[in-house]
View 1: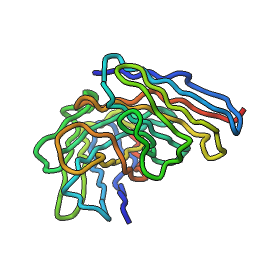
View 2: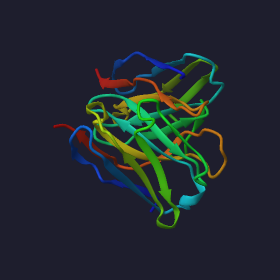
View 3: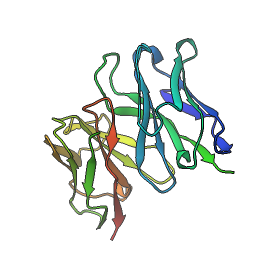
View 4: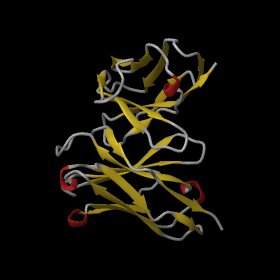
Length: 123
Length: 107
């Protein structure tokens, strides 16, 4: 069925790195912009990063710019988030989400979400 | 970045009540606003896109309105499954932002 499944979360020390993965199934992954969104414990939603459907462009929230990198492996229908120099404030559940509507370069809302993976940054 | 606010932050209501949540943007976002429902421990679910368009499969008891900087989400008759937290989100720029959320709880 149509779904997104994240993995790669865990406990990591401040300053270290972690890579999250999101495997897509049930739809043509190459046709959709893909996002990462996070939610700190007991807090609201924060958009993190986007990669265009063709991989031609990426955008990041100011809070992660220069530390996080979003990428995709189209043949494996997999989205990644490389997180470097992690901080305590990066502790959150990280969701991958699909931009609503195939192709195009205009901003879209998110119509499909994964179940999330928890990242805890702590010494 | 465009800032989003929501009111109220918490809403106590009973089954069958009509409830309205307001979302405001710090600058005009035309109709590029979405509403999401989130239940504890679950991912958000898209309810409304382009301010007033109901996502497929979402009950018609949900409706959205507004444009520019002020938007509303209305649930015409609250059902037990509707008790959750609701977020608005603007997508008018390449820096998506969410409102802080409105928790709808049982009165």
